[in-house]
Image 1 (spheres, rainbow, N blue to C red):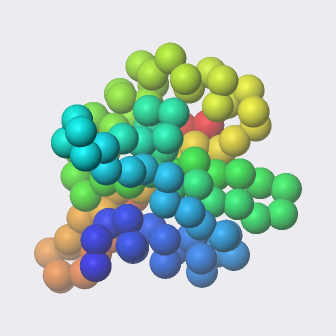
Image 2 (cartoon, rainbow, N blue to C red):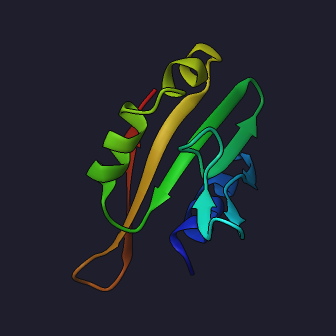
Length: 102
């Protein structure tokens, strides 16, 4: 299971409807995030949540989001923003770390 799939399962369990909003740009051969930093968009009554997912490098993703020129606009829209970091624990289980960037 990929980190994105793990976050989707987590968000659905929390009552969100979830869409993957990053896509593969065939011509540039890179993945492109919505507004430059959103992998998943999750909604539920009265709430929109933008999620950046990573297997490692939470601090790098935090810097990427904080430095992005679209961050103020997304915040002004009232969207919550989270980073979901996934890592394997010593016991071999996946552990999620959530950073709220709103």
